[in-house]
Amino acid sequence: MTGPPEVAGSATQPTPASPSGPGAAPRWWRRYVTDVITATEADSAAYQRVTSPARSAQRTALVLVVSAVCLTLISFLGRGRDADWLVTGLEWAGLDSLAGDLARHLSSDGNPPFNRLMLWAGVSVVGYVVLPVLAVRLVLRERLRDFGLRVSGVARSWKPYAALFAVAMPFILLASLAGEFQTRYPFYDLAPAEAWWPYLWLWWAAYALQFAALEFFFRGFMVHGLKQRLGIGAVFVMVVPYTMIHFGKPLPEALAAILGGTILGFLSLKTGAIWWGVALHVAVAGSMDLLALAHQSL
Image (cartoon, rainbow, N blue to C red):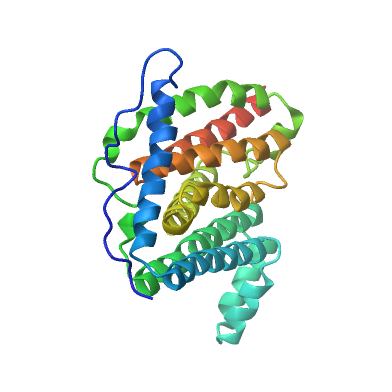
């Protein structure tokens, strides 16, 4: 498959003015919901007018299959307690010494909890990024910046993300009072009297990088890869697996992923970029960890 021909229109371009006055939707709703739906559906219709149904279906199938493969590999290979696959792979490659060192670091030597978390973060970053990038560049033959990685004009689009963080913080504060929250966060448990440096800070850096990869996968690759055929429906298709990766977390957090994933999907279509979504995710996760640490100290 080759890249689609250029089509006019984009969710990031201005749209016709919406009605105002009594009974009209709030301005923010029109700007971030109605106008995004209108522009995205117009782009989808334009794409399908100049693209054969077979080619459009192939593109959609590629994005969905790659997404399913990535999520499956991350789920099964990112389990820090079950890294036999990596140890066996190193042994198969003749790297017996390295395989032995890895097995020890994950079970007894050094800091096994930290090492298992870093393995999970590494598998997640690779899993969320490598296959989607190869699919975009080698199969679709398109530009990565068209999959949420554009940078031009991004600095001006911070306001809705800041508003989302302000709205989320009271709920995070309330959730942090629950025992289930305090037993789950932070993911890296400090030992008694353990300093934050180096392990906690190194874990936070890897955690942030994982969020960047996650945002590219869900709000970049999936949303922008599916929008040509599915229109605004691409956001809701993306939200299903995004919610599922939150299974096993506290119920309020899993439910919040449905709303949060939808909002971030709309904003990705609006801005054409994922970067402020990454910042929001890091800010929320950092706040959750800091609140959990504060409760532990009390």
